[in-house]
Length: 270
View 1 (cartoon, helix red, strand yellow):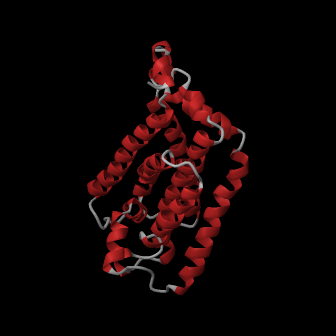
View 2 (cartoon, one colour; view 1 turned 90 degrees about the vertical axis):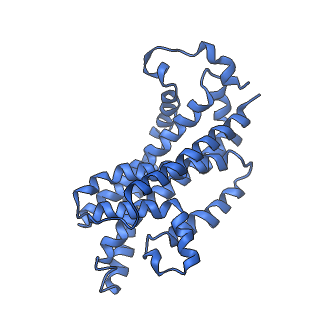
View 3 (cartoon, rainbow, N blue to C red; view 1 turned 120 degrees about the horizontal axis):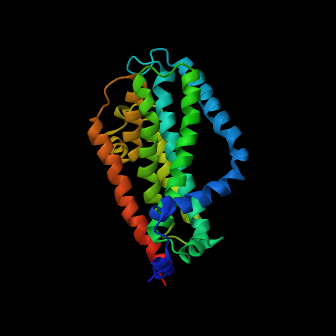
């Protein structure tokens, strides 16, 4: 039995926090973030701006015909929005999760309260999605300033980045809660995040890849997110069916959630 489960009978049952104890965990992360957000807010806007100017405007100047009849800047921006959601989701689910287990032991402190394991995972996951949403909105704002949003469906992009963040954050929660050293996180970025960013359709269509690499791109959650975001900002039909994309991303997130809760429970159980 975990410390959290042992204390469960004393858990408050009234009020919003009583009904959703994960909100107390979310509040903890938001209060901590309130002291650090200034350090990242400038880069949150500067990085998208430099990326759009560097790749979209700079490289796009050499792609006169665009991609599939679409200007290169318009083609690449939705991919960069999806890629931002992926990278923020992975970053916030890797070192912070490992640190809460190995270095500052916050999870063990939370488990000694009436919080359940699902509350601890759910509250932290909600904060990760908050970071994914705010970072992606900054990129979306830059994209709007450059005139790369061509459809009212672009309003659905924030919901899409939340789903992308959910699909990658929960598996990374499970992975990170299974390791003891941050050297394994370097492997995660080297062998999963960077290849996905390069070959999942962010910078060029995956159809130009060899067949083997093309199918690896199709398996990755990022390609599905990129295709949805590109369809939303350009107002065109995606390469795959919309329900298929949504269900695939939800499946990644759902399986990752089950694995993450299981791994957290194994480490927090006494």
